[in-house]
Length: 210
Length: 210
DNA sequence: TAGATTGTTAATCGATTAACAATC
DNA sequence: TAGATTGTTAATCGATTAACAATC
Image (tube, rainbow over the protein chains, first blue to last red):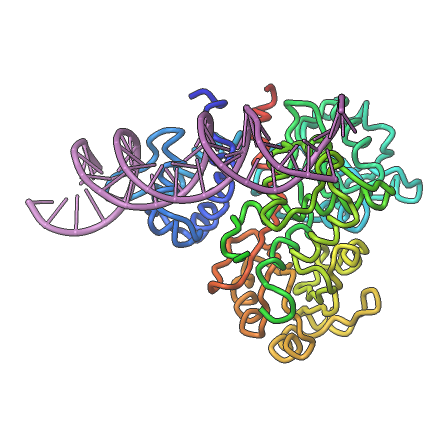
């Protein structure tokens, strides 16, 4: 099971499956077929089976997939067995909202460090966590063993801040700054930009009238 | 130029091109080749040329693309000639942060309505905009001619709120609730979920040691 | 002109889908 | 057993890439 062999697009769908399966599990459901899961997710049964089968035989003919078991397997595949520590860098409105968000723990993440360079903000607390000076990133990130950061700084300093984070040992960055970051190979990057999402829709919605 | 003919994946890349071109334009740059743009974006020159050529001949052999002209063309293709009015539904921390965010106007959007169902929040102001009762969505959305909404409500009410929005005339929803929404054909939907982004990276980062 | 770069074609590569034997 | 559903194969479909004539 060489991880290199599995297409990136399949990996990108696994968290979506996991999210839905966890919800179904919380609702007390025990099993689900690829057919039904496909209907819930707006995708095809064949694709779900193909995706899951890359990692083993987790289903059972006639009954489908056992939900708690598949959740466990997906969590293991995605390395979510343990909770990951995450830093938030840039405590503006958005960084603040992320720091206060309660929904990460159930998904495998815990925010354990906050950084900003504004003296007004440094030392303040959010959810019991103290905002630290961004200049301490090079020492604090390795100290805390943090491998993942959410980047919510202005565009003007996003690339350089990302570089600092990578040098400090960060291996994955969830980038909220509306700019493409160029990072060394081996560093994972995901971009979140609401305006991009909106612009992907306006093409189809059309101008005023559609 | 039947819009149906253009692959969705190409459309999804145009806003990313536009974002970078607008930044280069602000920096005063006049022209760019597909080669250079590809390097900035971490993609290939061939793909950029192929994508752009779906809509016309916007480049010039020997010199590349005129940036202001290409920006204008992309804006037109994506129906960003005029500013779109957008509603934010659910004014928690995240909705609040979106309402205060200054970066939308330059990208073609303006937040013109805020909704929540919490009596504590209704009537309060953010950036000069009053939070309105969510029960008024069916009348206010058509009144204001709003076609796009950002949905930042809890998972438990996300689907039903989306249904209400669609019935009120919304044609595109940027969904921040961590659940897949099932909507009628013709309604655009984009999902933003930071935990999904993080989980797409942990597969590659590996457990503790990589 | 010489060099650079586009738009496009054809070839390659990769992803999705349909179908079905296996089997719970 | 009969019905349901998986995992997988082969066929189809679609996207990316390489290459180059056209041309600025």
